[in-house]
Amino acid sequence: MSGRYVTALQAQLADMARMFGRGWQLLRNRGPSQIQFWFIALVIGIAAGFAALLFRSGIDILQTAFYGTSDVNSLHSFAGTLPWYVVLLVPVGGGLTVGLLLHWFTSDKRVHAVADVIEGAALNDGRVQKRAGLVSAFASLITLSTGGSSGREGPVVHIAATISSWISNLIRADGITGRDLMGCAVAAAVSASFNAPIAGALFALEVVLRHFSLHAFAPIVVASAAGTVINRLAFGDVTEFTLPGTTTLEFYLELPAFLVLGLVCGLVAVVMMRAIFYAEDVENRLENRIGLPVWVRPTLAGLILGVMAIKFPHIIGVGYETTSMALTGQLLTHEAIVFAVLKVIAVAVTLAGRMGGGIFSPSLMVGALTGLAFGGIATGLFPDSSGADTLYALAGMGAVAAAVLGAPISTTLIVFELTGDWQTGLAVMVSVSLSTALASRLVNRSFFLTQLEQRNVRLAAGPQTYLLAMFRVTGVMRRVTDENTADEETCQEMIAQGLYVQESATLETALPVFDKSGVAFLPVVKLEGEAAVLQGALYHVDALKAYNRALAATAAEEHR
Image 1: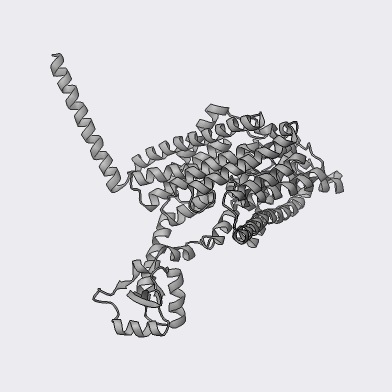
Image 2: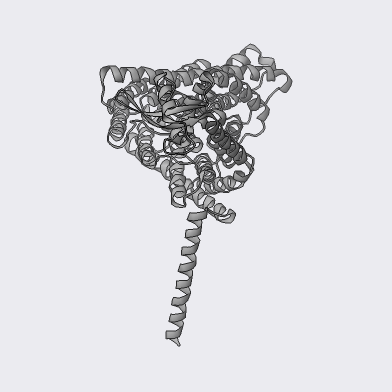
């Protein structure tokens, strides 16, 4: 009897193994079904949530080792009690370590973050480079633990995207599925980092996927909820910042002031972004002119930060302590102005020095300080018709962050979820709308999209522009061996006239040539020294067909 039982059990296990094998092959060959996709989204949400939790815990552990405290909400106060040489040398050591990591383990010698995730979603079927993601995560961990003036949301988002990329490759996900899984991972990571489930889901749609599609919304919400549960199991249902109970608003009299605050915050956000890009350009030119080794750049950035931190430890780390002081009105107006200026400089030094980290937390700090300073001035000029200046700090925090991220919806919700204050929504929304509208006109919509523009990745104008860059002419051309291609003699005559495109070109390069020349086709050549070797012919009609199919597929994905 027992032998028969064992045999039956073995047969059942073998059947289960065969069923699992068939299911796995079906999943890999045909992609996940709706139920499977939701399950994968949940798994990715849990994995991204734990990754965010581990990253945050890693910062606490290393920060304790270097500074003697794990509490980010009291870091600058504690650092002010340390010997000056400790405050100076810790960022230098962190910068040197990051520089060596970039020198040894990366090809492009930089730390990847949110902009690379956006690029992966738009141009690489929802994938990012996994090796670069791991190195960037470790570099940002070192940066944020050793006084780097940046945020933790950028590295966490990239870690989550690395996880989703690995799973997408594992199941051979197509572009739509890969992007949706990336959105799930990003939503869970943001939710787990900030205990903000609503904002996490909307951040993934608004910033990373950059469209609101119905088919992606439900699984992204599932993943975001999973990330939030992980955060609350570890830290409880608490907000990052605690506000005083005096945030009152004289609606009819004060709303014009919040409109002006929105414009001011938009300008501050632009100054912050341009300071980072200017510092990046200066350091690039200096590096190329002098020929500095890669590892020197983050080390010098660490040295500058260390020198600044001796007098102003407020610039260290994500800046939650200073942000909280601004939101609770513990700073004077002139202190808020000085700290905001210094934070902008510190962030520019950190990111241009390629030390790693994100931009969101610093923009929250700069926004809160800007709002507090504006509120101090406004309430001083009109004391009888003004509410608390801390309300201006809350509105400013959202306004600068929204303008930097180019994400007014998710940023507004993040501000509410970080503070737990839902009663002052009108003031925040008014300021956010004005700041975002102004800043988007002065930069390429957001910090991330402007970063990509500087790398010649043009996503800001929408798919009608960046889709052209996805198609190489070699993938659309008719080869010389095809029957219905142009004859070689005609192609050679056009090449002699300079009418041709290289095989490395994209439709972004080829279509303007068609428009200018009016020809029906262009020879595609491979340059070998001074000789142009004919590879095929790119027909105008074929290029337009490929472009139209890509536009139709994008529209279909956004409206599924």
